[in-house]
Structure formats: structure tokens, C-alpha cells
Image (cartoon, rainbow, N blue to C red; front, side, top):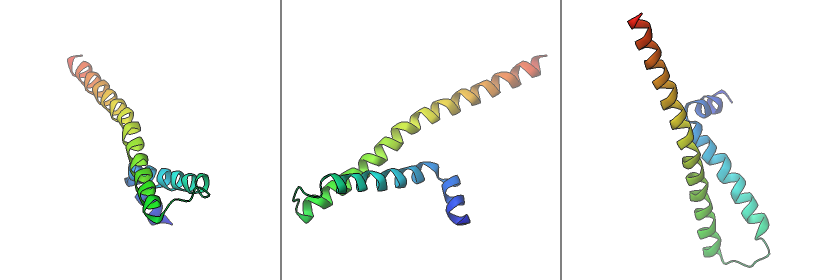
Length: 85
């Protein structure tokens, strides 16, 4: 269990991708269970759903990158102001 917590802490975006993909695939299978897809169609849908989950996590991660840049910029400005005083 500690290994899973460490992995989730070290790789939050991959963890988010895995969790989101599992949830999305479950919803896909439950929603389309009576449609009558062939195994090839199911495979294509599941793969596409997993890739879509990855794209969603990647796009959400853009906001995190912007916040990190703002924090770094504020730290540099604070250090500059302290050194000038």
C-alpha cells in the first residue's frame, strides 16, 4: 500500500490518468453493453477512451504548470526585493 501511495505522490498525472481511464471505461462498457459492438469495435472504443482520458489529464495539467510558473516568479521577485533592501 505504501508503494502505491509513493507512486501516486511521485507521479500525480499518471495516477490521475489511470483512475480517470478506469472510470471512463467502466462508464463506456456500462452505457454501451447492449449495443452489439464487435470485439474489434470494443477494442477501438476502449483504446480511444484511454487516450481521451490521458488528453484530459494533460490539458488539466496545463493549469498546474501555469500556477507553478507564477509561484516561481513570485519567489524570484521576493528574493530580488530582499537583496535590494
